[in-house]
Length: 348
Image (cartoon, rainbow, N blue to C red):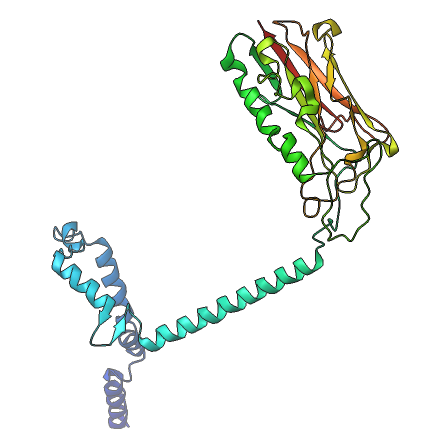
């Protein structure tokens, strides 16, 4: 029995010494086979992070982009010529003939379409508009009033009677305003009308309307015919007032519109007496107005206002108003609706 026992023990000892069958050595072998790759990568990364930079790595000059060599003038010219016409690819400005043809065709069709659409819109607009009367009239029916002359600072008239240069600009403005009112022009273009009544012309809207005469000589002392300075050289200035045109408007409902002027600030003695030419009303025979297209030679009626006794070297605020049925002359928002305000200062 001992030999068997010894042999069995020897076999066990031999099996126990076999590294493949050793229970304690099998697991470390697996670790040696699976782990080394990852361990080595981690170690290399740690070494790379903690490894100091070499002097060559700190030389940033070598990392800068190298400057391109400068082109000569002839090289630039050759590049431009090649861009304009490339004989190898037969391209003009980077495009072939087919590409340029398609572009021109596209833009030609686009602009032709836009022009046709614009023309159609304009035709539809003009077809819907009446050339003789506005389709929509949003104007305020009561008329406004304007004056002439106006100074460089607006509605301020200031001058010295003895200084021609101070009032020459006012005289020039009045002369320009009255050029179309010369008697020969009015006699040639317009007709004499019956005063005190509306001049109604119930013709077709396309027929040219006749206009009533308003002669410059009717303004008398403010016409510039007797006194070319319109009184400014004597310290007795004239101004011209007119109502704004409103298509088809019949002012006063059969009664002429009256004009009044007074000192707005200060006593009336500063302004003195006031004279009106040819009279202080807008005669009814100049209404209604039929529009610029058919009332070609229409001449606005005027009221000339003369201040013969204004206080010298005194700043006077003057307000002239329209008075009549349907007239508004005290609007808080529109200073020219039915009235006009200006300052007057006359020096010796």
